[in-house]
Length: 181
Image 1: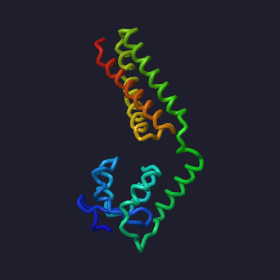
Image 2: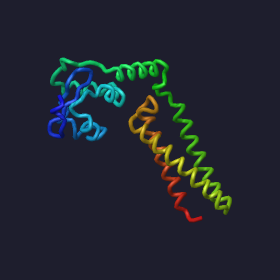
Image 3: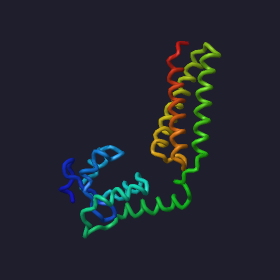
Image 4: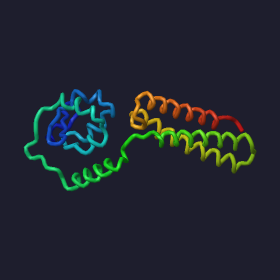
């Protein structure tokens, strides 16, 4: 298994099944770095954590063998127990209300920053506006990224809409930050 860890010969194992992902490498949605850095190893926990259920179908096309000596480590066992407990508690469910709250907070940050810049000439107020825009940019990056993976709301179309709104709020904040005061 460890011999197959290069760009031209790349294998990974998931739950004791071995997959030749060499041909998949250029098409992997997460880029080649995760596969190259984990090549030749068991990647079960990373695969389960970062891939939707539909990825199993893609993976099955690349199966080449089964590991005879596959065992789950104690650390992986603990991680899997914790992940299952969090899933049972519903903490991984996409509900959408967190997304709505984030968008409202981002709009409030933008409105507050614009107001501080336009309503006062105070350097402290302008610095506060800059900090608010910084928080807005961070939140829009997180929300835009997560909605790009369709993991914020159950609907693919709504995830796309959230992504576009987050990007537009970020662009508005960026243009406001460039406005001469």
